[in-house]
Length: 148
Image 1 (cartoon, rainbow, N blue to C red):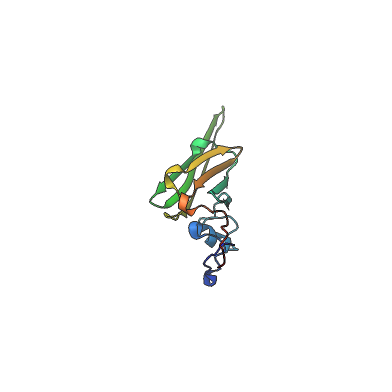
Image 2: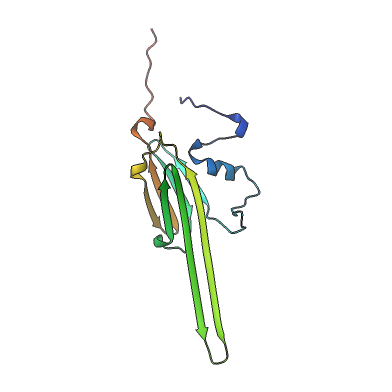
């Protein structure tokens, strides 16, 4: 059994570690669009006994397209990708360009997260971050308390 403080006033069902995630979850009109009506990648957040795992779905990108920063306790995942194509023919020139960018930020709890050992990898269209918990924040095995 795990004791947890609940604040039912703001309908927070998840750890406050990802407060931005909670706001987006309860914003039913969001539909994965930013305030500028551009798409932002979907994010999955999982917690297990030792780590938090963040998955960002971003197919078609390369690992060099991402920038992951930790400023204090603010974890930011961003990307900017620009492509330009130009074709010259006798009677015309065709120029096409595209620009894609996004930024997602999450506030980490300093007393829970081991900030020095966060790892990231990009594979098969998925950026995965592993955020380890500090030893004192890890889930411990149930302990039997003797009744006197």
